[in-house]
Length: 33
Image (cartoon, rainbow, N blue to C red; front, side, top):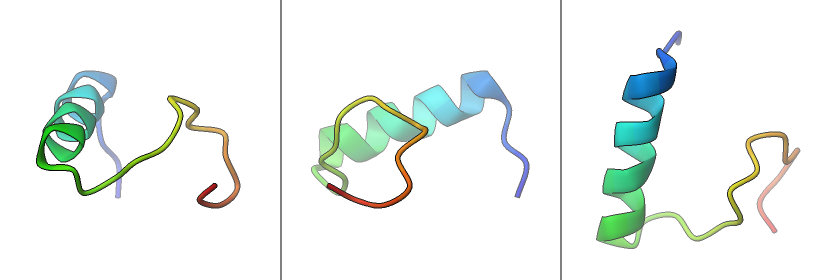
């Protein structure tokens, strides 16, 4: 799935607000911490 940088940021912001994902801002992580 290809997502533009802007959309990815919006999705990430929404997920963080909802408390769905909790992780460092590092998109290069191979797995969840």
